Image (cartoon, rainbow, N blue to C red):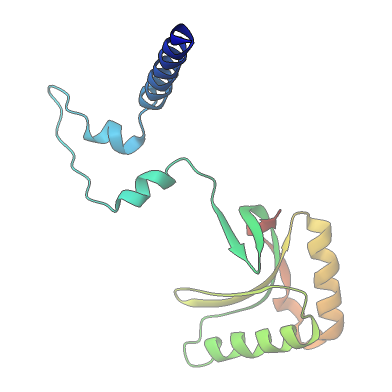
Amino acid sequence: MRKIVFLLFIVMQVSAFALKMQNDSVPTIIQSLEEDEIGKGKVKIYQDSRILNLIGKKKTGTIARSSFTVGKGFRVQIYSGNNQNVSKREAFQREATIKRDFSDIETYITFKSPFWRLRVGNFRSYEEAYETMRKIKEAYPHFGKETYIVKDDIKIYH
């Protein structure tokens, strides 16, 4: 019985040491920047300790109990304007119109100076985006030439 306990103890110590070596063998970018090297400058990074835990993780989030990953895809751009007096209001008005008639499509209003943009959907293929664009143009012909498909980072739900 004593031998079994001793062997179990040794196995646990070896596996703990191996795990530590595995984790220490691949330094993160933060650790490699903070290393002291002869002939090189010293970098000191001040940050929240939780940031180190996020390095190397997939970018995910949760909305309404659905998890998603951000990836490349397509959206339908409904509006883009750079008139500071009108564009923000127009983008939000069009968003309300789209949400009223197409409640299942997610909308995204962004401001990248000087443009206000309204984009809708998370489409993995151009064909999906085209079908939605066609329905929107059919429902709102006055949106006309402003409605087109753009490549964008989209939410890919699991």
